[in-house]
Length: 193
Image (cartoon, rainbow, N blue to C red; front, side, top):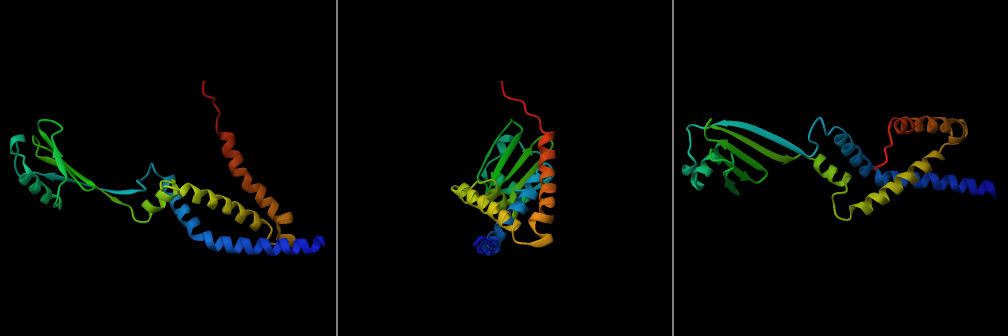
């Protein structure tokens, strides 16, 4: 009786591990790509590509000269056709706002600084999912986390014999535990006052 149960448990583990692995493989890859991107947030912007240009104006402008037509002319310098609005942060500057871009012009030195943001393809969408920024996604993320636990547990019992969990696998499992144990030992706990 116990042998039949072990055989059924083994078949069940193999089937669930295989099918859940197939089903969640694309989400696992998305989370891994996003995780790599977010791990290096100090090295690059994982969500946006930032394009910057410095433009030399052909002449000195005065604040009184700035109107919609002049702002459209400024836009042509940076390949922008339609501005949303503009304002004057100081008496000698104008800041023009476009969809996902700004053009900040200093009248005195005739220099304009243009900056445009565009979504980084694949990474932006992956990071939105990874950070649970979508309404209701936390429930999908919770189910996903539980399924990863099941995939991991069922994977432990697929192989039998000398390469199975009880003989060889347990040592790799314990070795894998060393990484978080070392990381935990390096953290300090300081309770809030």
